[in-house]
Length: 622
View 1: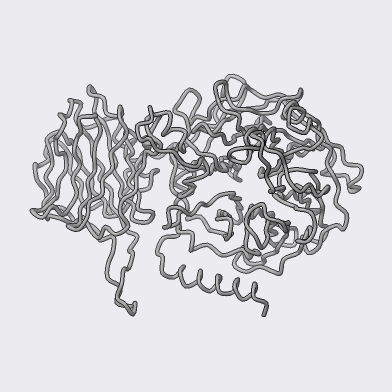
View 2: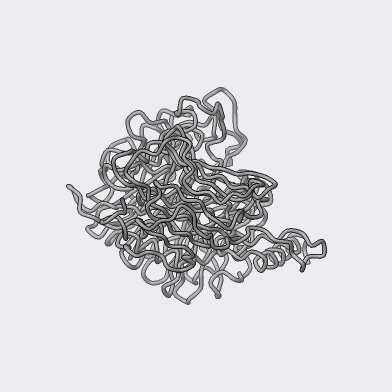
C-alpha cells in the first residue's frame, strides 16, 4: 500500500476512534473524513442523478497554493461515510488548478468551474514591490463537465470569457494578467445560471489586498449540450463589482448568493472591517442595491464576522441557513480605542462555526431576509484550528455540512433539533422543559434555595490505562429576570460558592455588566456580558449558558445573544478546559433583584433561551 494511502487509512481509523470518545455531535471529530492528498480545500457536493454524492476538492501534497495543487472529485454512495477513489479533473503535474465549484443541470450533466494557471505564470507582483510565488488565483476561469455522474470528466477544458472591470485594468499588469478565484456556489435562476467570481485588483498584505465581486451569467447552460456554444455575460452592469459599503476597506470577496421567493437575489460577502457586507438585486444581478453592512434585520444590529467564508443557503422549506463566525476579528479590537492593544490575523478565529436561520419578510423594494439569533454548529477543541469553506446538503429532511481545516475535509450531520430550533426561533414562545431542575417565581422567590446538583465538566476515566481526563461535554444554564430598578455595582445576584471559593457567582459590575465567575477550587474562569444591555427602568431577562462542549460562556439578554457590539471582538467567552466542576455549596443565594429564576442542568441552546424570553416577555416579573 502506498505511503499516502496508509496515512489516509491511519487518519480515518484515528478519527473513528475519536468519534466514539466525544459525546457531542458538534465536535469536528464526529464528522466523516473526505480523503485528500494532504491539502484539502472547498469540499463541495452535488447529488448526482444516480443517487451518489459527488464531491469536488482542491488538493495537493503541499500547503495551500503550493506547486502541484489541482482539482479532484470523489463519489460517495453512503452520504459521505466512505468515498470512491479520486478522479483528477486536472493532473498534479500540470498548471495549478484550484477552487472548483459544481453545477448540475437538467439531464444530469455536472459542470465544474475553477481557476487554471494555463499560462504557467511563475510568480506575481505585489503592490508593495515584492512578489508572491503562489499562483493559484489567477489566469483563466475554466470548466470541465461530466456526463456519467462524476466518474469521469471531459478531456477538454473550456474557458469562460470574463469582461474587464476597473479593478482588472488598474492592476500592476494593466489587466493583461487577471487575478480572481471563486468559492461561491453557482445559482440557478429561472432559465439561467449565475456563477460567482471574486476579482482581485492587488496582491499584498493578506495576499488579496483589494477585491470585489462579479457574476457570470449563462442564459443557455441549462439546455445547451455543446460547451462551445454556451453564452456568458459578466455582471453587474458597468465596470465596478460589489465592494464594501462607504467607509469600508478594499477587501470585498467570497460572495455567496441565493434567490428569494420573488426572484430577488441576496448576496453576502466577507470584508476585513469586522462585519460582512450584503446587497440585493431585483433584476437578476444586473444592478445591486448599495452595499451595506449585513444586519440581523433591516435597521437592526450588524452581524459580526472576520475575514472568513460566510455562506447562505436556501432550504427546501423556503427558509435560509447562514454560516459565519460571530465575532468581528482583529478589526473590531482595533476599532475599540485599542483597548487591548492586540493585533492578529483577520483569518484567525474560525472556530467555532455558527448557524443562523433566515426568513423572508416584505421590504420596501421586495423580499428581504431577517436572521435568527445564532447557534454553535461545529467546533474543535484546539482553538487555533480553523474550519471553513462549508457546503450544505439537504436530503430526506436531514442537513449535512462539509468543512475543511485545510488539511482535513469532513462531512457532518447537523443535529436535527438544532436546525429545527433555529427555524422555529421566530415563533418560539415556549419555556424549555428538559433538565429544568429549579423554577422559582416572584413574589415567593426566597433569599436562598437548595441548588440542584450541577453536572461535572470533567471526570477521571477508568477506561484509560492512565486513568486520565474524561471530558463529559456537559454544561448548565441560569435563566433569570432582573427587576426594573438599577442594580448597584458589586451586587451578588446568584452565588453558590462555598468557604473554599468553589462554585459560581453572578455579580453586577461598575460597568453595568454582569460577570459570571466559575471556580473549582483549583482555578477560576470568568466572563462578562456586553455593556449597555441592562439599562434601568425596565425588567431584563438574562440567560447565562456554560457550554462544556466548546467550553464557551454566552449571555442572551432580552432574547438577543451578546456578540460584543462595537466595543469588543467577542461577546461570548471561553472558560478553562481544565475546569472540573462548579458545584460549590448545596445552597444558592439569591438577591432581591432577581425576580424569577430557572436553573437547567444542561446547556440551553440560543433558540431555547430566546423562547424562554418570549414566553415571559408579555408579562415579565417585576
